[in-house]
Image (cartoon, rainbow, N blue to C red; front, side, top):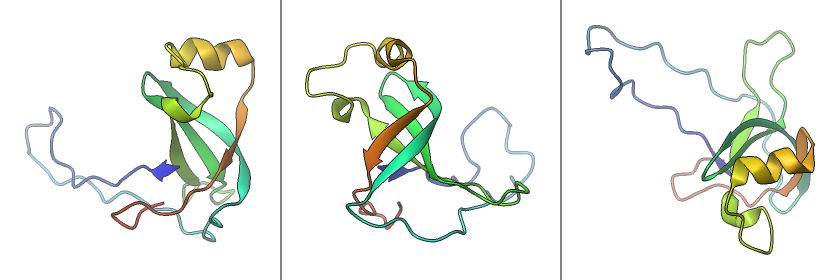
Length: 107
């Protein structure tokens, strides 16, 4: 699972008029490498599924630990339509194995 990265606020169509507030980062315990987690599906895209594997604060002040399960990791056979595949499973969660941090040191 690779985590979402916090951007510097560039890009988009905002016109560069103001600074974007810094993104609040996950502040809970680290995930254990090699451990299996049940992740709540938070987004489905052509390239994979975003999952929250560790919850954030109950009051919503900090987000949960979220990462990407790439479409190539969803099934042994090729998945051509990620959204259709996940919808066909009729589930809101997936079991995933945490692989550790990426080259940038992100979850």
